[in-house]
Length: 314
Length: 253
Ligand SMILES: Nc1ncnc2c1ncn2[C@@H]1O[C@H](COP(=O)(O)OP(=O)(O)O)[C@@H](O)[C@H]1O
Ligand SMILES: [Mg+2]
Image 1 (cartoon, chains in turn purple, orange):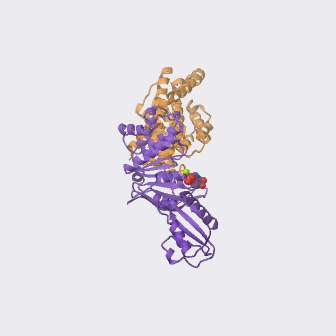
Image 2: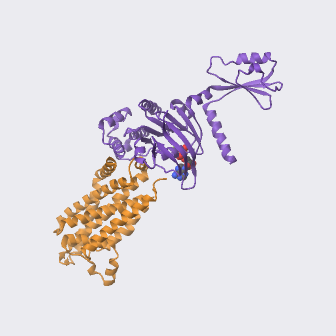
Image 3: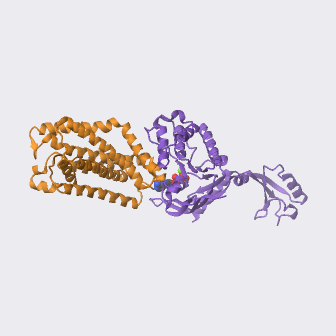
């Protein structure tokens, strides 16, 4: 698939000398939903604000549809819509005027039919004449989405879309995101909720302390999520795994006292009975056994912990 | 050129004026009327005329300049400061629009507003005193250029200010004294010689003098000096703004 956004060696040092992004390299494919997952302060907002032109980068290069975001900022930015993390809106303007204003800023003439259908889709049509400050938090979030979509962008950034959002809006939002994806819109969202990334993303990138730790397809991560480990403590040490057991995904620990069997819980047959029978036949006696589940959460936590340790060491 | 973008900013700013039409017009109207009462009637009863012009009429150009300057600066500085303050500036930064186009939208709207107010004041003044405008074209030129120049100046203030105090500091500390000391309500011939010399360092004097010339053909300094000063201030503002944009946004992290 074609890369729609490429980020090369991107770094950001804020005015107070804080390094928020450290040599980020990332490719976003056209039409995918990409979730940028990371704890608070990881640099998610900084990254997407740089792509959108709200924050300047310190080093590196970004292309959006092959347009350099600095040199060809008009072409690059015309393609982008952004829903910011904070609910920043004017107070006294009406919903309709404010959404039309956003479209104008992006250099497009008024298209009342499009804006009407957009407001209807976001359940904002009834509120079109309301002043922005009269709206509830959830409604304001909808207005921000409408503004971001007002100029029919081909890539949409959602920064922490479900922060302070009610269940209904979240459902609506995922509906809209899926419909946009069907229309071919590329969607990049940031979140620190793992479930959110799991629910809608095609690919997930995990970021911590300004570094991308892992980027993978969600199914791959879920596959790791479905994996379970059976840990067998042996009575006596063995030197190597008997050939008859080689077809299993086994791992012998360094002290030769423990065998770990990794299997997929979603398979109809996990192979545990066969494995245990074969081991008994081989004369391998067990002292104890237990199982370990790997969730995206534990993958996430391990990765983040790992990168924290690395940071401490350096 | 992002024509729709400039138009959007311009109309968005004008819309804010429409929403606050009452405040926008009422406060300059009240202060104008107060000037007429205090300066025109109270002082005017002592000073019959200046250079052959009735005192009430004499002060009209200066009063318009005072309003034009303060309004242009406050409109434009507030216009750009407000989105910085609320955070809605993100939209301007993310839009495919150049700094020049953003300035065009904001400064255009601020200048339009102060021109409207200026015209309303001329009309109001006409109710109090006799007005004749000897050179309407020159008058329009001064009106428009002053509005644009000081809107640009206000934009610079709003652009650099990072709190409300700074936003108000320059207008109160610099502009108001310069306008009052710039011969708005008197001719500098009425001052002792030393203060006449000092006054010549005040750029606002040249604006007021030139503007007054377009009404009554009386002036403290030559009309050409006034025009040159006007263009010099405009050019300085354009230079300052170009340099600050070239050096990078302060509003962008
Ligand atoms: N304007 C700024 N000046 C200095 N540091 C900042 C600024 N904005 C963000 N940071 C710091 O950069 C880091 C990343 O912030 P951010 O991108 O907002 O993280 P996230 O969105 O992942 O929570 C944080 O440690 C934050 O404190
Ligand atoms: Mg954030």
